[in-house]
Structures are given as structure tokens and as C-alpha cells.
Length: 86
Image (cartoon, rainbow, N blue to C red):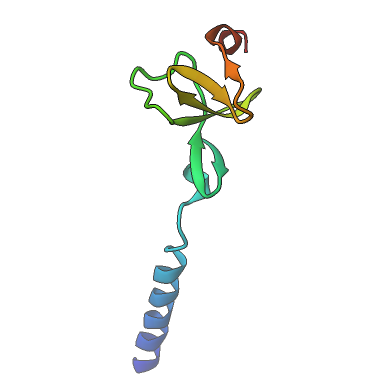
């Protein structure tokens, strides 16, 4: 009985610590960049896009919303017409 309790205790510790390894990459609906989940871009975007918020686009890669414009990683502006075409 003492041995089985010890084994269960060790298995419990292993399970507890193995589940604390950070974000589960399987739950991200986009891509991971620098440890951050960047969600997929869906047009039209959500109504309350926040300045600096990032999204992943199949054509443009990671893009962010800055000062009312969609910006690619190389700081080029992506128009809404370009996003509609894709």
C-alpha cells in the first residue's frame, strides 16, 4: 500500500509539472510569434480593434493596426481594398 501511494504521488507531481509548460500552442487560432499567439485575420475585423493589435494574414503575414491603418511588418500600409481581394 505504501509503495502504490508513493508511485501515485510521484505520478501526480510529474503530471502537475508537465502541464505548467506555458501556452498550449494547440489552442492558438493563428500563429505564434515571439511566444505570443497572433490570431488569424478575418475581414471585416472586429469592431473594437485596438491600436497596436496584431493579426496574421495568409498573404501579408503578421500585420498590425496602427493609427487607423493596417500595417505589414515592413511598415507598408495595407488598404482595406487589398484585404478584401484576398
